[in-house]
Image (tube, rainbow, N blue to C red; front, side, top):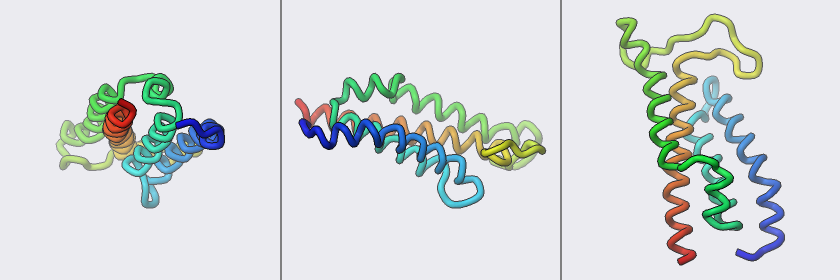
Length: 138
């Protein structure tokens, strides 16, 4: 796509969308939102970048293979689910750190699970969108 206005807007929107996706991820522990919605916002940012500049530059901006993100996210999400089983508690029981952290607030296994979901959703959505945009360009 050869639109100077869209290319300029994308350069400004990409970092803002990524920051907003992190905000949605962090906010989601006390209000609606979280890993799924944050991952979709981040994927939309990279999809916009790919639509304007092409899939190659968007993959370079992502800096990691999207399919690899899916596996990493699944491992992180499992790290948020399994500790409760090792303590004899039901699956997905939230284990919380006692002291809240600045900006983030309470941290525990649900936060870890949400981060994993964020990364999985980002990886899946970007994989699908990059494949569709590559087919469109061919």
